[in-house]
Image 1: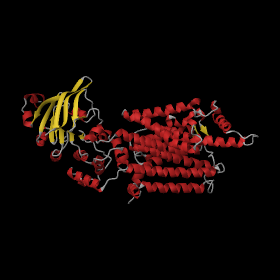
Image 2: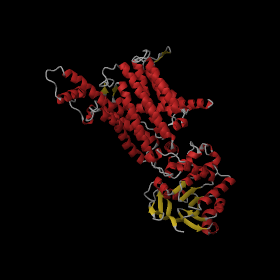
Image 3: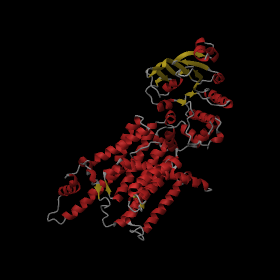
Image 4: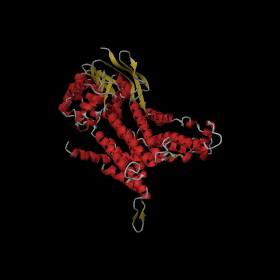
Length: 246
Length: 388
């Protein structure tokens, strides 16, 4: 397995606070990875750097076979390169239907002129229906996204990411605020997605991480504290001290 | 087209209303009908129709894309200036050529041009054409400028603003600054557009001197109605498809759209520039009916009124913008035209010329509080109650 994303020696400082400190991280394709760590460990900042929202002070972020640097690309360019991001709070277009949300996300030309003259083909509609089936929202295609339940919105957002056909999926706390059956469905979705692509899940909830059954990276104070199977990292004394012990 | 009609039922309704409206006004006009409606009223209705076009543009940029531009009336007035330049030059040329034709020696083209320049620019102490009037003798060129000048200004302004990710109230303030700066600049006498005198006599259409104003006003009404119909179909078409979904997505959650890979700045620029051009065209139809344009027309308050119309009408629904512009601007004409009866309270007399803005402000607050979807929202309620 060769690496799809390679982050090396990255640091970023906000007003004197080192949010990320000489962080190095690699992920291959396909792979499912969980990133855990206490509050302020730099999990979200890490995602911000990879997706182009935050520029690091130093370090490299390389992408794909040709090791293109993601630094200096805009958020939209990075997204088009194949990195999808799910926010912590579900962000879907509440005022539009589930079908419209998915249609907007489908991997197509993104320029204003192409989009102006775009009319969906039967294949596009079929793809939207497949995606809706995958995330369990087939019955809600014509529902306004705003009236979906919290869990359904999270799935819709995951569906929108899948519609983008990304090679790397960054998912921020997908299980927050979900009931147990909803969590199980989310676990299935992520595991299924990780069969063909790289998926990084940032999560607080240890039970959820255990169900994902994958390699775990522990972040602490902006750098990697430990990496390995969940059992391996949870038996690490440092990890117990900074995170689990509390 | 048929699909659009089916998807957005307001389109066929609006087109039908417009045709009925224009036919109705024509039949009652002085120029082509019974004369029940005065020529000045027909002109007011034609001008109101043009205001509805710019309100439609405002709704696209604010109601759909979420960019609260408080500068779109600057683009409207620029469109008016561009057509006004041709109207004034061609008209003055005709008048002067006619008067010089009596002279013993026929005038040379140079003499004719100089005489026209003195006639137009004498009022600001000039006697030759400023550079920006280079194409003013050509109708085609000035019609192109109606599109190009507002379009390019919006393109450059929008590119600078959106590229720096200026959003929300900061962007609104920038657009206000733009329209104020433009207005102050044009108020100066030496800028080439006759300073605070503006351009006048625009109601006299060169080559149509024999057509009385009573008939001309009907022609312009039809032209304005046709332009509004086109603008409505265009706006509905743009917003019906995926472009509309992306645009509304930008309004509701800009970051989400960006992380889906859409170049958000490009979309904003597209909508901002496109609606500036719509505003320019509306202005080019409005000012020949108004007859006069001066820099006051692009004062910041004009663009704020525009936002008020759209808010009262209901943003994010195209008919809302049209209804808001028509209702509020007609009411405004009535109240400020001195025809509304003053109210004598004994100790104080409410004169509507002064108190209309208070009433408008009150209306704005009430609509925001109790009908956030505006007058258009009431239509939605009615449409939902009516069985299909």
